[in-house]
Image 1 (cartoon, helix red, strand yellow):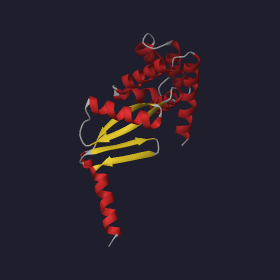
Image 2: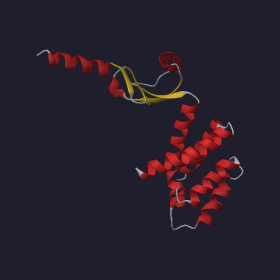
Image 3: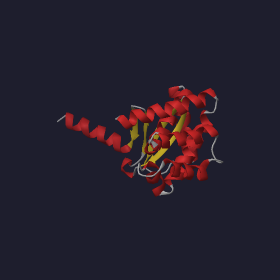
Image 4: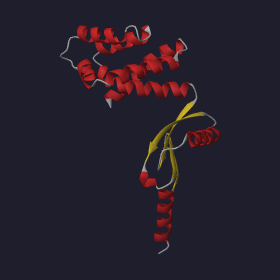
Length: 180
C-alpha cells in the first residue's frame, strides 16, 4: 500500500511538471521508453533498485543510457528516483502517470477481450461505439481469451460489458437453474 501511495506521489509530481509545460504526451512517451529500455535488460532495474549500489554508479549508468535521449526534466526525474531510493517504483509510476495524463486529456482506457485477434476494422468499430456511449475518446487495450468462444468483453474502469458467447451461455445456465 505504501508503494502505491509513493508511486502516486512521484507520478503526480512529474505529471504536474508536464502539465505546466504542456508536454503530457511527450513525457509519457519518454517515461515509457525509459521503462521499456530498462526492462529489456532484466538486471538493470535490479541494479538501479539495489540499495547496496552507490547512487553515483547508478547515475552514471542513467547518464550513459538517457542523458541525450530524454528531456532534461524526465532525465532529472530518474536521477531523483535514484537519490530517493525509489527506482523500483518506476513501473508503477509510469502506469499512474498514464492514468493521470489520460484523465487530463479526457481519454478512457478500455480493456477489450476477444476470442481471437480483432481486425483493425473491428477495433475501429469498437472504439467508435465506446466513444459514442461514453462521450470521451477511447483507447483500446486488446486481449485474447479463447474461452470466450466468440463476441467481446469490454472493461472500462469498474464497468464491464459482456457480449461474449461464454457470458451468454453462463446467463442462460443461471436462468435455467433458477427455474427448476
